[in-house]
Length: 184
Figure 1 (cartoon, helix red, strand yellow):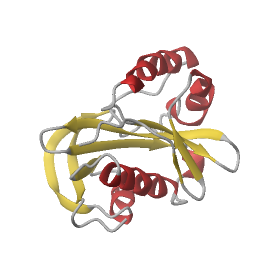
Figure 2 (tube, rainbow, N blue to C red):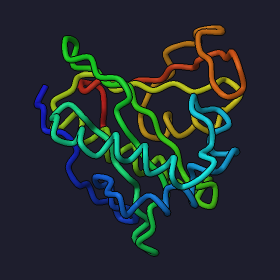
Figure 3 (cartoon, rainbow, N blue to C red):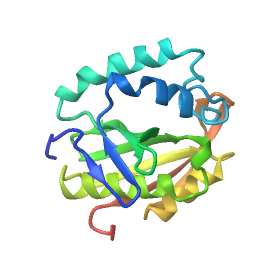
Figure 4 (cartoon, rainbow, N blue to C red):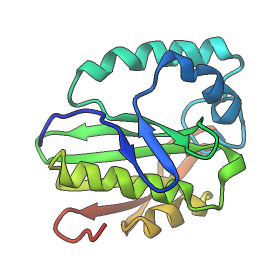
C-alpha cells in the first residue's frame, strides 16, 4: 500500500477533494442535516451547522496521515459540496479498504455516487496500491447496493443482523472488488 492519502480526483461532473472548513454550510444544508440521507447510516442527522463544523474540525487534521482517505464531492455545475466518500476502515496488512458514502437527496438517481465510487476505486487500486475495496449497505436500502454493483463491485453475501444503524439492527449486504478483477 502507498500511504498517499486524499488527493484531488476529477471526473466529468465531479471534483473530489479534501474538506475545508468552508464546506461546513454546504455539508449541513445538502446532506448532513437530512434524516432521509442519514436514515441507513450510523450517525444521526446533524441538528445544526455547529455539529457539522465539529466533524470537519476532527477530520481536517487527519489529512496529514497518508492513510486517511476522505473526500468531499463537489458538483462542478454549481461548485457546491453535495456529498462525501471515504475509507471508513483500512487494513494495511491485507491492503484492503471499506468505503462509506452519502449524497444530497437532490442528486439521488443520477449516477453521481456511482461516478464518485468508480473514481475513488480507481485511485485506491491504481495509486494507493490497494488489493481489495469493499462496502456494505443495509438490506432495506437496495439503491446503495445498485451503486456498488454499477461501480464494479460483486455481491459477496449478507451478514444477518450484523449491523446497527439509525433504523436499529440490520442485515449487512457486502460487495467488493479486487484489483486483479476490476476493470474501472
